[in-house]
Image (tube, rainbow, N blue to C red):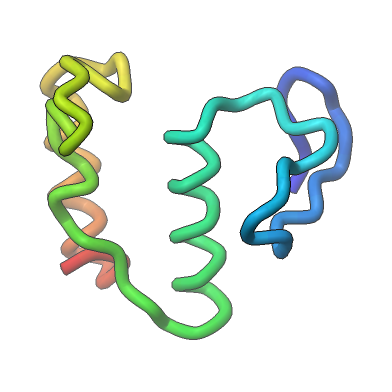
Length: 82
């Protein structure tokens, strides 16, 4: 993966380590982790990951408002999430 801000190549297979050169937050890191796991081994994500408020109780965690619900529906249709 190439970081959009640092332009550095990021090795995403360190599950417990900080990714060197990664400029995103932990929410984005978790999303990339989940997509990587789906691509490599077919492990699906929980569909409720794409909702307005995550379990952490942060409002609009993604910053996209209700547009995150579009991603929710698409992830289910593509089989990425259940």
